[in-house]
Image 1: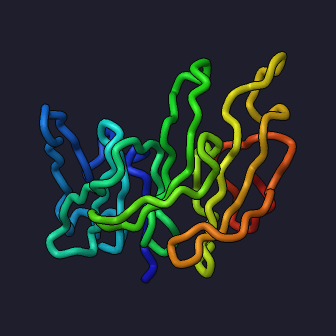
Image 2: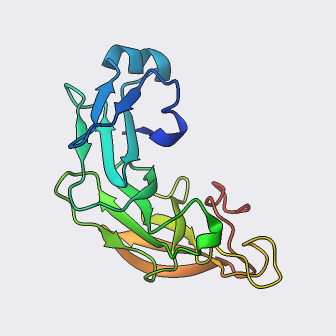
Length: 197
């Protein structure tokens, strides 16, 4: 199935697809009508992953009716992204928008199921901004940076801090790892043909 996947954080603002109103217990989320999704994307084969207060949610518009799903075991998620096959979500834990805090982050994947168990794909504290390698299907690959803080006397994280790593995902488990770039940590993934990070 050719599934169009989108990170909700990039389409939430002003979007017709999702709007969240925070309440004390659980968020109230208003979903778009499936016809609106079909009209906008040209298909209803659309999945969206997003976080609310560090909890991980997804909506699968191929379901009838489309419904909001919370992955119960994930309570510290940030920057989620859906795999090219539409079956997994990669995300980071422990991230901070304030680079000065030097928060350590770990890269994880989880199957798109409310009862799924998360799987760590990086070493604890060294997996920043995980992204699936575009077009990777058999096996899936997750790429992440190992550092997100500039070194002493350096201005940018990519200036000699850490490296960019890709790890194969086989049957939902991390497999062989390979270094993509060892001269620094570039955040945000890799191009389809792996010629740009």
